[in-house]
Every structure is written in C-alpha cells, then in structure tokens.
Amino acid sequence: MEFIKICGAVLTLIGSLFILFAAIGLLRMPDIYNRIQAGTKATTLGSILTLLGIGLIHPDWLLKLILLILFVLISNPVSSHVLGRAAYFIGIPLSAKTHIDNLKQDRQENPVTKENES
Amino acid sequence: MNLKTMKLKEISIIFIILFAAWLILNQSTATEYLVSGALIALAISMLMCRHCTVFDELRLSPKAFLFTLLFLFTFIKELIKANFDIAWRVLSPSLPIKPGIIRATTTLQSKMARLILANSITLTPGTFTIDIIDDTLYIHCVYVDSEDPEQYGQQIIRKFEKYLEVIYG
Image (cartoon, rainbow over all chains, first blue to last red):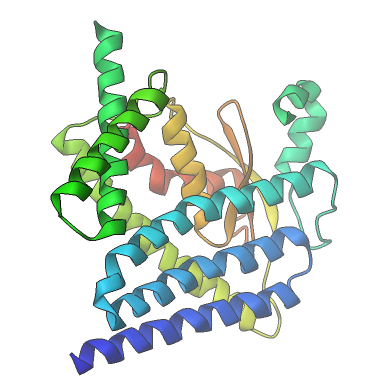
C-alpha cells in the first residue's frame, strides 16, 4: 500500500517536471507556433502523469481521473490546433529560423483554398 | 434497411459511451442509478444521433479492435518519446530547433479517421496540424529532421495511418 503511494507521488512529481519544462519552453521559444508546441503540449504528458499519480494515491478516484484524462486528450489537440490555425491565418509571422513553409507555397500557387478558411 | 442499421449502430455506440461515463461518475450500481442513467442515455442518444454519421465508417470486427489497441500503444509510445525530445530541446542551452511547415498527403477517406489522425499528430509534441486541405495535411514541426521534408511528413503520418486504415474503411 505504502509502495503504491510512493509510486503515485513519483508520477505526480515527474508530471509536474514536464509542466515546468513546458513553462521554460514558453519563455525560450522564438515564435507563437513553437510556443504552442512547447507550452500546450508538453503539458499533455504532464497532466496525464499528474492525474494518474493522484489516482494511485487515492484509488477511489482513479476511474473519474481516467475520465478526466480522456477529456484532456480530446480537448487539448483541438484547442492547440485552433490557436495555431488562427495565428497562421491572421498572419502572425513565423520565426526567422523557419526554413520551410509548404502551406504558404501552396496557397500562393492555388488561392482557391479561400473557401476552406470559413 | 441499410440506413436503418447504420443509425442503430450510431445510437448504440453513443448510448454505451454515455452510460459508461454516467456509471464512472456515480460509482454506484444501485438500481435507481442504473435505470435513470439508462433512460437518460437512451433519450439523449435517440434524440441527438438520429442523423449522426460520426461512427459510420467504424469497423466493429475483432481485427479492428486489435488494431485499436495497437494504435493506442503506438500513440502512447510516440507521446512519451516526443515529450522527452521536446524537454531536451527546451533545456539545452543552444535551443536546437529547426521549425517548418511541411505537407503530407493522407490516403484515409473517412472524416473521423482523418480527425483522429490530425489530433494524434497534434497531441504528439513537436508536431501540430495547422490545416487540412483536401487530402493534404499541413504540419508544423519543431525540428524538420531531414533533407527531404516531403518524406519526413510522410513518415510522421505513416506511424498512425497504418492502424487507422484498418480501424476505419
């Protein structure tokens, strides 16, 4: 019993470390797209591990926490996709380090894609 | 006839999901909980999913089930690998990033399968889907790790696509 609780605590610690890395990434990355990468998504594993750790410490809550993880897994990609897409289409520039942009090339060659933006 | 069975499949899948969520949230198997939950789940699934086409192309065969498990396994593996990768990039002093937006074409036809593919790519750190136009996905990568971006995009997609092909038509 004690062992499971320690496992839970370790999982929670690792999860919060990943969230810390995400915060550092948010500060260090050069543009919004890379910040989305570091910020919203290093938290995926971070929050999953944290919730699982809490689940091990309080086994009664485990099923509810798994439900919570599922909701995070559904809502997280949608929100980061929408943020990134909106940023791209209102023309926030990519950082100078970006060395390839196929989407821009294709949109210049074929501007019909306008209808897809709605 | 065909249309009718399709609808039945939609309704039953939604019903199972709703009822399972209800049971997990209540954590009780008392009769009144079971009955009221079943009634409400049935009412919602009948009212809301008469015209849904969300699970139309989902295959309910043992092989599809096996591939769902394999898909989840691959997904979790990629998730952990990519998280460590991003953590390393963020922490190393020189910030080794080489971002780019690359295109990748998918062979999946089903809308739901494409949604799951795009969401899996987005959930894996280091890559996220900016847009889907026809059957081309535009993926923003933190590190485009190849001379040939075209091939790299295909590589990212392929990892998930081979399972989704079997699960959906």
